[in-house]
Length: 204
Image 1: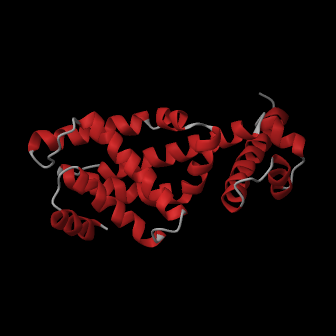
Image 2 (image 1 turned 90 degrees about the vertical axis):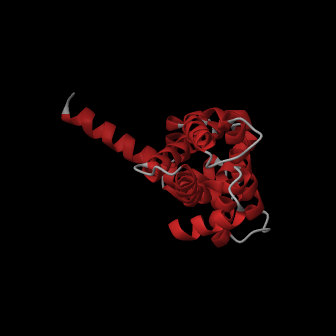
């Protein structure tokens, strides 16, 4: 590869990254932001944006992929070296929440364009980790639920989406949402509320 080609590639990558960063900020500020608005905010022509992303839906889809990657990284880091299943769940939800909170308006927007099933499919690897963790907790008696681990993982996922929507609708303060969501998830897994609250206070 020539130096000129390498330079062009790095410029294109930098442009793409800038467009994504600006698009996220613009869409969080205005969920109806057009590709023209995003191009102006990024300081590029409309053609440049379309050169990287053929449609607004493709741009949003790429942003959702980035959100899922960030969630997966936070999940892996939070669970590392934690042996108690209840503590592991508490740490993962608390670690995931700031990432999810950053993207919560995007996720609400993406449900109109990527589809709920598309988001669910992207979250499959995260869900598989949660299923294994929940199954271990059920086997060890840390959790108690009439639901099998895979179904309980879906319940947890939907609870977190619901809490994000509650924040979006002004029903819950954003600064309280992470701890509240973590206690709610733990109690849904059968952890007594007093223990869940104590655990969250201890790790947050």
